Image 1 (cartoon, rainbow, N blue to C red):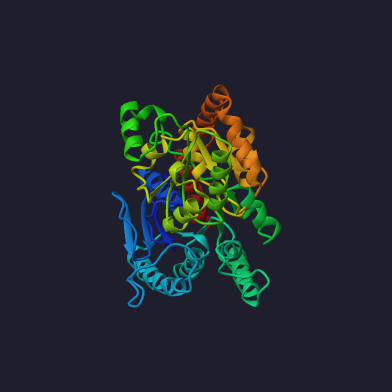
Image 2 (image 1 turned 60 degrees about the horizontal axis):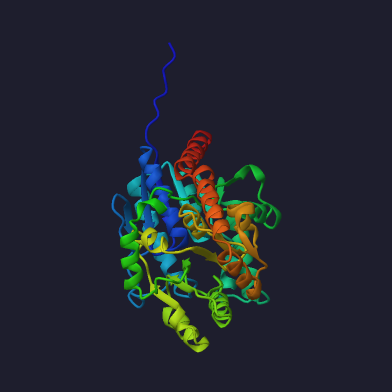
Amino acid sequence: MAVERVERPLRILMIAPTSFFSDYGGHIRILEETRHIQAAGHQVAIVTYYKGSDMPGLDIRRTWPLPWRANYEVGSSRHKLAFDVYLAAKSLLEAFRFRPDVIHGHMHEGALIGGVLSRILRVPLVFDFQGSLTAEMVDHHFLNRNGRVYRWAYRLETFISKRLPQAILTSSIRARQLLQNEFHIPADRIFPLPDCADTDRFNPAAFIPEQKLLLRHQLGIPDDRPIVAYLGLLTDYQGIPHLLQAAHQLILAGKNIHFLIMGYPDVHVYQAQAAGLGISEWVTFTGKVEYRDAPFYLSLGDIGVAPKISSTEGSGKLLNYMALAQPVVAYDTAVHREYLADLGVYAPVGDVSAFVQAIDNLLQNREWMAELGQKLRRRAQEVYSWQAAAANIIDLYKTLTIKN
């Protein structure tokens, strides 16, 4: 008599070389992947840095603080090497405690640590690729593309991508092409898994107009100004200086408009830039917005913007704009095209004047704005579902564990 195979819940050890949870970018991906994998009945333990917010319902296991560096900011830093040594030690300890069926390494440091553990424990490694390591370090001005250190970093990135994982998840089609064309990863090891949208939380119908008006007044934004909204990291490679220059041009042209810029770090740096341009009256910086509050704050926007210059990373913020039925003005990159398709309003990368014209064109046609917004929300609902993404990840886990 054949014995029916009973599937048991999988145990997944995620390695997140960052201060999880923080309210930006790849953290949202880690959070939503974990929530939906757990909702399907599987166990996930996340090993991460010392700092970060504890999220309800998640099993987060943190490193010890560095004795000489208890406080730190996001981004590239020489201290990150020490953080990752601590992360490797903590991951090894938790791997023997948790006994995972799969290791899921986020970013290159997570894949490097996970690659060692996968060989010790003889379990598969899934690498969650969120952009080129060396390209990001160049974007952060941490590496010089023409320097000697860059060549060694590039070799390390190639080794991690080619030699360690059994499968690679990519946040965009552009990332898949990068892995195939530049790092020569076989296509059958690459699985595109774009960031997705929580269309229930980011739902324009969920917010009462009176509450939105109250928040608007609390932020000091006049009632008669349409709002251009940005939510994400405040960095040069995200295009924040370009956004301020665009605001300056629009205000000089006499446009009745307000820019709501939400995020961190270095808020004071960009506030000073706005003051230097003489536009502080038309720009509101909120600082860090907690993820739980992000849908409400972002719902104030009439237009979402993505002036991101980097072409190697994902751009998950677009999905929140889309879910809230906001038309989106973005630099014309492959990643932005992947999310927005022909529904985006594009400007050539780095062309601030074209970015200004794109915003102004929308403001001149409110019917077009509303039509684009509704189409983008439908696209978010139909194409970018976390439930479907989690099911694909779980199927991949199961395939790899059977092979292993």
